Length: 421
Image (cartoon, rainbow, N blue to C red; front, side):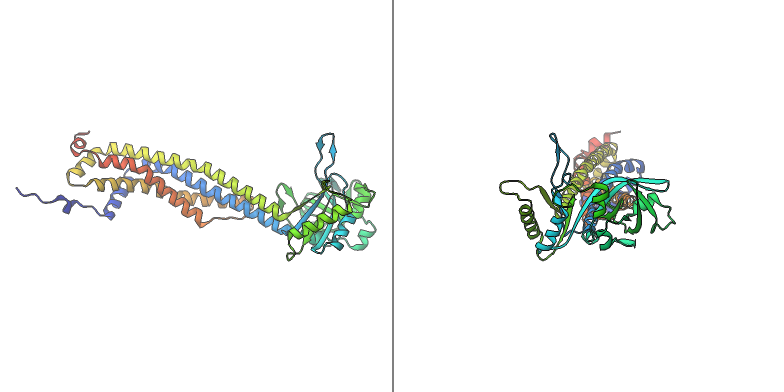
């Protein structure tokens, strides 16, 4: 009797392995779908969280850039009650005269604005709201990129004569006035005194937990005389000073010049500490970006744990599949199927489950991220890197999870396999 080599007739192409794998998975749709679920949840979580984190980070950058990344903020020193600090800006170590000195003597300072602030009640007819009242000079709009959308800001004459005029922000307008009412010319009450509304600022949004649209602006002199009161022997006390510096000179030059000037004006000698603090928007932006990036990575890493769970699920199902298909594997090996063909089929099945689940997860993650960005009104950001990484991870998990089941299937003895029920 003459035998021919079975390899010539039973070698299986890659296309045939793929076709058999798809057919096997399709014939067990429920099991395949449940196996994919872990990968879908894992990948969609990673994609969504990464996108949301990047969107929030982008939103923060836009908001700080809108305020001016080339702005320094000088805050008055801390007041203390007992051993409890009341926070920066709570004592009168800065004055309006300090701001004027910075404007005239610090060459790198392009715009300088002093301000006072106080939380108080604002009333219009039967409506009232608690908001922050800012007493500012004429440079405040330029220093903070906060300009009237309708009406105007107060002028030099109104500042000099402590006029009772007010510019309101959009949130205050919404709380006090009906939507179809133009508030310009209306009279509102601040701490029981009447102020005329002369302008409404443009929408600026939130800066962290602070709503920059929940504020009103009055002349600094009016704020000092009628709401806060003069509390310094050296002029009008202020809570802080904004300095917009020239890009050419740079932030370090501005900080150095301002610090030296204020130490000299406040008669602070080494090794005494400053009675003020200089901060800048660039450092705030850098810090927030770093924190948000770390949070995104941390939460994404937690979400990625579900990928491990998904991989374990795939491995378990494939091991069960090997047991259920023992007789099928025995028949195929008896007909000449090689160990590598059996190994490749089970590996392809595991990778298919993982990759298809990953693709669905990527789509689901994008939808979740887009919905969240739309609902909470921050930029929708999705990077190609996260998509490629997500798909690559799903394929890698499938490959790793399929190795042991595929090897077990390939190593089955055909005679033993044929005897199984």
